[in-house]
Image (cartoon, rainbow, N blue to C red; front, side):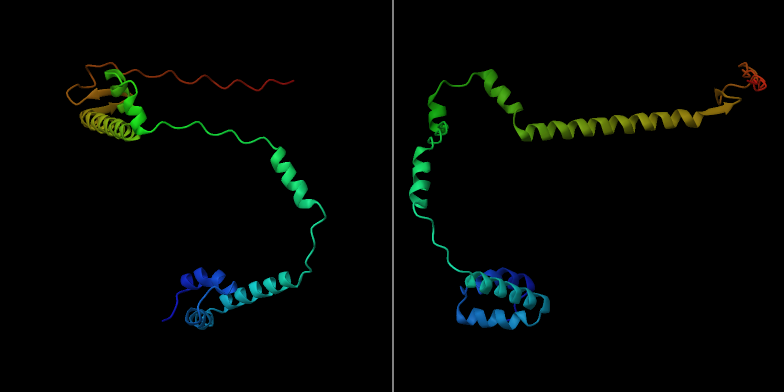
Length: 175
């Protein structure tokens, strides 16, 4: 059976630490030959492991473990977390009132998601309805001389407002 690249990557650490059985090890070694980059990675890891094994063993200084254990014993014990009430303890406690049960419904994430979806749908419906309504009015209007007239009105019925001419440009002041 040919192993995929992902399966070979998953078996890499087990191969490096000799944790594969003989059949799986042979299968891994055969599969690695298909991927030169993976073979190079295996070789690099093996060299690193051999260099680490070649390092000299260093003895701990005298009294190191005793000093460490003394520090651990002298350190204050961590505070125990407050016990969390179980469902049975919560049920045996004072029953929640009607308002508390009603309010707890609104604090659920599902409710918040449903309300958000309704708000988005409502806003979308309003935008669509408003856009459709404005589109109807725009089709009935004619723009004439900067004034908006409906199709039923004629230009003679409404005065046309002509904007004043822009002021003449003053000559630049000399300093």
